[in-house]
Image 1 (cartoon, rainbow, N blue to C red):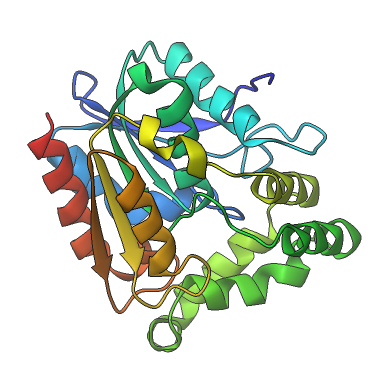
Image 2: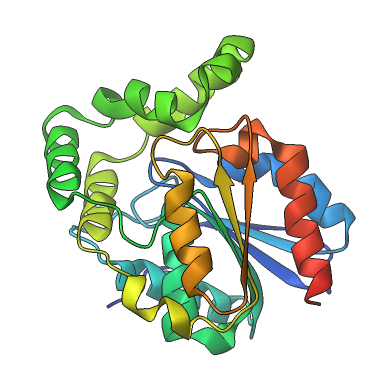
Length: 258
């Protein structure tokens, strides 16, 4: 479990309560653009970062574990001299948030888990996807991923943004993507969910084929201070497809637990 110095940007009030935004497999920090204005206007200090192997972060040789990705978060908080943060994670980012909540609970003020899972099998599916990406590059999985990320209606209404997200996936380093697939392949956070002590908001997309609402329900049932919100129409990147609703839910959660 060796941390790397991930790429990040900080926006908003330097003295505001810190909110860390952690993204999905195949994304970079641009996926959180719909949340920045709402959070900074409300007075928060917003930190977005690229997972290791993604965007402008380093790409160490894989495989990675969830503990590696969690260690990157703790190292980033240390670099920014942030003792405790509000953590918002989607998909892989939510898995990282659950790991931090289980193994470093003192670093979290609140936890928001969007469109994620504590156990996302079958493992063979992630091994197969990693093998495809290593052989053919991330462009080979980009179109299928975007179809999971957004409902058909959203894609039809936003063709240019859909292409931008497909290009984002295709530009992800193959080794970084495949190595993060391994982190999901070997992940099982279910047994330690009751150890998460931070007030937790769990958000599910009603139309999410990647992490359906049942996965969110399982998390919300096991985390002591959790509540569940299912929103729609929304697929996997609910923060992009329904930014107004997601922003209101996040801000309400932060304010209730400030």
